[in-house]
Image (cartoon, rainbow, N blue to C red):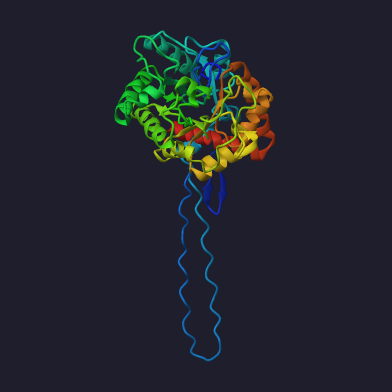
Amino acid sequence: MRNSPSIASISVSIATAGVLLVTASGCSSGPSNSGQAPAEGTPSVSPSSPTTTPAPSSPPASTTPSAVTSPPPSAAPAPAPSTPSAVEKQLAALSLEQRVGQLFMVAAKATGAEPGTMEALTKYHAGNVYLSGRSKAGTAPTAAVVSSLTGTVSAATTGGLPLFVATDQEGGYVQVLSGPGFSTIPTALVQASSGAAKLRTDAATWGKELRSVGVNVNLAPVLDTVTSPEFAPSNAPIGHYQREYGYDPANVSLLGNAFANGMKDAGVAPVVKHFPGLGRVVPNTDVSSNVRDTATTRDDPALEPFHAAIKAGTQWVMVSNAYYDKIDPANIAPFSPTIMDTMLRADAGFTGIVLSDDLCSAAQLAAWSDADRALNFFGAGGTMLVCADPTSIPAMHQAVVQKATADPAFRAKVDAAALTVLRVKAGQ
């Protein structure tokens, strides 16, 4: 993002043979235009087992040489209707406008939210927010800012559902919150030198500081593998700012996930980013267009850190804004069903929130209108859209509501994404 170096009935549920099927479907890197390192975020239903109907008993043996026709087995009983879960009931109680609101994470300046942010939270039902920019105010003033945001929750705004409140507290050049009560966090490359055990302990401390002010999601860690120390200075989004945990996937996985686990220990959800990786690109998608990765493949070893995070239960994965020529050259990652549905859902088995990087201010998105950015992202399988510019929210929200009203297949995607957000909010 620009602030970062560069964050009723349920129509989605389709009853088929008595089994409830729910289709569920990521802030970037790089310096701001001003040269300041940005702050990224400036961050299943398992089908029930089928019932086996016992085979009908064999008919009695015939006592005559003539063939005996067995009576047809009795028809299997119709499956019992599924009972809606608590989160399905929550979804059913939300209007379409409120469901769409759950799919947005809007920026709020860490020093105090501006009117556009408050309008997104109240008028457009945004269900999630992230603290952006930089604040040196410390914990007490930050807690007051968070309280002003969470105070917008009501039956009319989010249907009473709490906000996810995120920020980008990676460390080094990407640390949104500082001042009294917040630690000074080193870069990921320096964090890595402490080893996995100490890093997990340190991350838990940093996470508790976030939790103390009401932040429950951290748009970190970076799990991108930069190809080498020599290439790192040329890798504008990651290596240039020492945001990498190392130069091979095994070390990045061990150390980056130690940070993630420390955040979980503190009760803060980590967001692993930027799938499928920004460690091989040169320009930064925040300030350049047509940024392409020409090497990463669908089964690339550099995916290992993300797969490990998913296996460990991470519920948030942020996708990058780059093109991936060997995966889906026609679509940037947040518009790519191959990356979000095939690679994350099918290949990696991910059932949580597929989060975009900033889709509102990044130069990579300049070719698309605000409305098309949102429609393309959700249409391709995204779950939650990060927007660094609150003034873009009205057009995005209205476009999604209008298309969901007119297009049942798109409405199903919206409802599935909203249900995924509600499940994660409920801790499922």
